[in-house]
Image 1: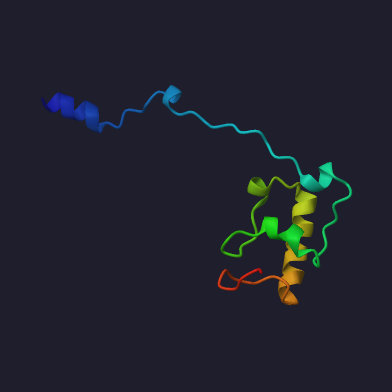
Image 2: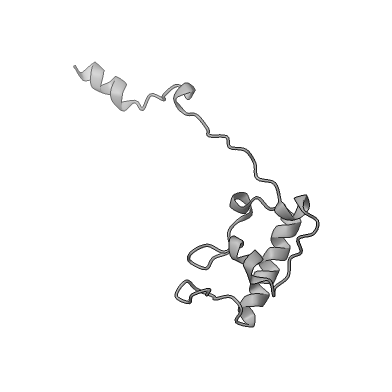
Length: 95
């Protein structure tokens, strides 16, 4: 019986087949796909998609933007916050 306890407490690893990664289709950057869309700090409707419910800027891996456009979006959101077009926190409403 003590041998059974040793085998269980040794921390045997599970086979790698039990761990499966979920691969989803990668989102394309909407600004690279549509050249007519411009990133502007005055266009709040466009920037609203890149802000979470809490008022945080949505990361690139979730929004699907490329690095160049993500930097421009972050800059535009920060500018809009500074002139009070967008809230800094979730306690203020966007409407």
